[in-house]
View 1 (cartoon, rainbow, N blue to C red):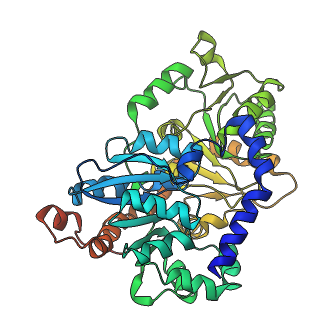
View 2 (cartoon, one colour):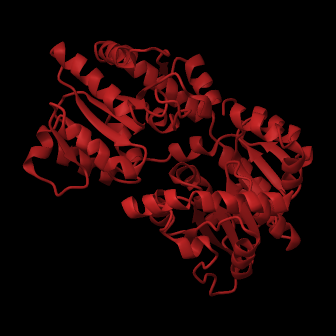
View 3 (tube, rainbow, N blue to C red):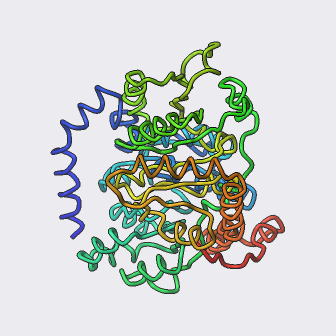
Length: 450
């Protein structure tokens, strides 16, 4: 089965080469870091210390890992931490937010036997930690052959993934046999991975690390700089449309038009999900009747007058959420399963999503149950409903603030996953509990909503 997996992986790589070439010419995607993806990673660990290898596929996983990385650095000072990512945007963010804790940040190797062996030979890690539930058969087997423990952290298995995995349960069970621990976001996720073959003794429901990372204070210096540059303190309501996909930008613009027709003058900060779409969205804005400014451009006096600000930057979204009156989180009108609603909620921002939130189903359910979220219906006219919801919220300050406060309380009540995860990691890192570690592993009640 491993031979078939490797063959299909190679076949897929060859078939997609034209797509890779096109994307590389357009925006450098995939080709960036190619030598590292083939196992030629930079030299690390000059002091000969043991290494913890943490993998965060992209931006979301890197952001979720922030609280864990800080605590790992404190609890296990004798280890060096290295971080890998798959995407270019994840790489840029990881290099920024982990610059003080990580000895190296590099691109994750393609899961061929020879590439992962090459990386393991250079790193010789004491443990490999994979954020969320990315299963890499050749890496896991190579790690098992070297007696290197593998941990799945902040793991989740969606309905779609669960159905797909069950079709090849025998192979998945063999892959999971090489996993030392799985710290899953919820009991449902833990149950699913057990049903796929992971031993119950290695499976734990520890909660969602995103609650802990989102609870950190926003970068006030950055927030103030953006506030001042674009004049967001002028009293006009600010709507943030975050992590949007096509056609959500057009939907938001239509909603903005409808609201403007009522005489309500609001401002919009638009943050597309993928950087390769920044220019595409800028062209859309240039063709509409609203004035706009780009975060990436040199500041000018017209920035404070712009109806729309395009946040064409990486890693700044969490800093601007506290500036918002309302946040719409994308990937939820477009059928992508939604994106992180914890970040705005943790700052008490009234949050709105579309109907498609299966990637955050448990969190959405918990927020809705406590009145901390507004979810749009599945409709042929999402712009009309979004405009109506925004107008109602802006005309009822008490309700809007209350929704944000309920969301913040849900976030606070679900923190503690970092401490529970660290307790599990101590078992696979073969670490004796020093006073620093004992303080890091204080008991925290299990989270109720993941």
